[in-house]
Length: 373
Image 1 (cartoon, rainbow, N blue to C red):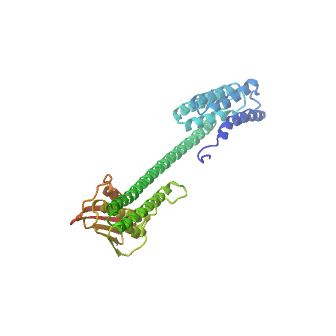
Image 2: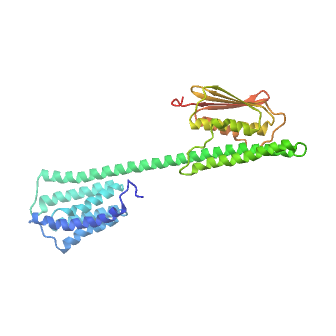
Image 3: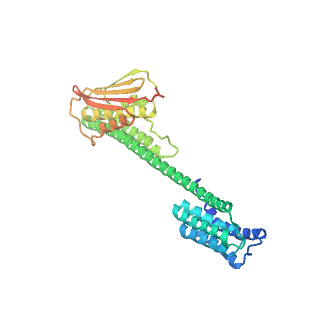
């Protein structure tokens, strides 16, 4: 697909041919109105074609092309041929050179060309045209060419800067999405695999003496493995172009999470329960999930209280455990609490994790945007 900011390639290729056709045919057309000028001969036609042919190299060699077109035009005029389309090639060359950043070279070349035309038309031409008005008109025409080229150059630079900014913004958003997916995968895997590990250990311990309780643990493992696959699909679906851009975990699924954890959990809710922005819903869900995972790891057998307080400007989440009767196992790298803090900070909130009696308490405060509040 062609960019709206770039000329089609066929125009770039055909422009020199078009300039050559106009210069040759147009010069023959204006000769009848300039009877005092020398008719175009084969050498004159050759000079009319040199400039357009040089334009084919204007992208790679803008300065030499500019010099060639100006010199050829001056020679054509010195031979006494008619004024007219011969100026198309140097105008295109000067415009192109300014777009590519050769402003000083164009200014110097244009100053030379202006001096040549003033000297020639005032003193060297067979029928001199003198006067300040003529000189001013020539300067005005050449100035307009420079002004248009400079305007195009500035516009091109602004468009390039805008594209660069948009590209950087797209990369930043992609990086943030990858970080979000990494956090989601960490939370999903850490919670469910920790749950599977604890329940598997329980099943192995009870399978001989209490097979019915072992059956319950194995059922929990089956459900946890199913849930982890479902949530991983939900997280990874954000890679598809037609998928929702955010995972579906939210506070409405908190009861399912508590039931799967296998812990004795008491859930308390205060304030006006209402839908919250997806970012707040997702962060609240993951904070509770990570906290329950930590209880399962480090305080098996502890009872847990989950408090959700819906305020007018913030959602407060408080998860408190009573402390386990037996020491838990340490799994993973211990990034759970820093990860929860990062989630809260990303929304402009805070999170604290401190000892509470024999147990532990995690408290998060997540601001609610005013439009949602």
